[in-house]
Amino acid sequence: MSTISRNDLCPCGSNKKFKKCCLKNKHVFTEDYFKRKVIGDKFNRVFSTIQKPIWRKSLKNLPTNLKNIIKQYLRNEYVFEYGCYYNSSHLSLYEPKIKTVQGWYGFKIGKDEVEEIKSVKNSTSRFIKLKDELDTQIVDTKKCVIYNIHTWNSFEGIHFDLTTEGNHTFNEWIEYNVSEIKDFMTEYNNKELKKYFENEIKSIKLQGVFSGKRLLNENLIQIIQN
Image (cartoon, rainbow, N blue to C red; front, side, top):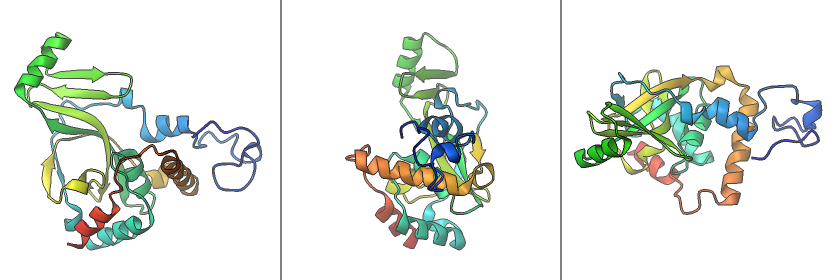
């Protein structure tokens, strides 16, 4: 999403020009604002070295009222493969009790790979940060887990994940590492943020950013209904 000029229509959906509407509002959802304040600065995201695994519930085992909310959402909105930031944040706008959880998602790796990382980084630390121009990862050399930046949802203490459950239907202890739980319904203007997401997702589809990536809706609806 490009920078908004003074004479553009305001992204809040008022149909007024930006200069006569939200120009003075620091919460206008430009791409830069979205990345810094909504997604957060992923290169500086806090990693907890004492975080324990979190029990993730499969969609089919969620409370009935929550399942109904998600089913309605899936019938009207898009859930993208590898689109965790958009998927989880957008969903949290539809129900005040659904929170967006920002953190890390861990994958098991082999001991040989861990030793290679320690050698390349010349480090004996338990936690080693890997960073390039695209992403940041954390390697737990003791547990042989590599953490990638990820975002999912929680509901009254129950954690679930639309993005990763496209290929799984199980309840399991997941190597999630929580850095922040965001409540968009109270922190942001709901109408304004919804408008931003709708424009951004439309842009994603038109630009083919997710070209070759699956829409997960059909799989997720099937999981919920089982």
